[in-house]
Image (cartoon, rainbow, N blue to C red; front, side, top):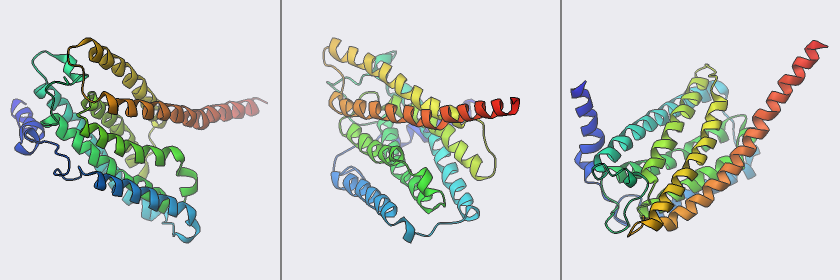
Length: 280
């Protein structure tokens, strides 16, 4: 077991490409503003064009879509597991000895965007671009008009910008955010994978509830980070980019609560009405 742990630790933390990683604006692949702008602009342009000219687009059959969706979901589920494990081990490895405040507050006086924790934040940044394929799969499906919502497009576009801005600012809390978000994505993409192969899991509503709890937990951690920022000598890194992220998360919370209300409250009411009809 110790040998297995050592092997995992090497490949996810100690490997030179990870342990010696450093985000350098304009030098690290994907670190330029042009790369970000092109990635998000192409995503939004193609998505909006597909909605505008939806009648001209072919829709793939369920038989064709299922194996593609299953493969995509399985890949993202496995990548999410790797991110959770890698970032967790990296935080334990990189943080100063017994200084758990580092998890929520990177000291502003000497924190550089360097090391294994920032590698996994960088890895997460690219995973958000890979998740653009989620939208493509919806566009190619026969149910695109029902499934492609403002929440979906808004979330995918802005979260990519958020990851980039956070890397630029060496933003505090990002390592913890990667762990929490990726943990939920393990559950979410496992659900998509199983659904695609014909198994309907019971935890669809749990995924939405976890996403809402994620925001609540994030607000609590943000309050702790702000406390350390204003009470420590040098403060925490990336408070400016945190403000952008905080506003985005508030808007997402509102949208997810609305989504939950529309999709689950109505279903509960419908089931209740059906039971009443049976009683009659």
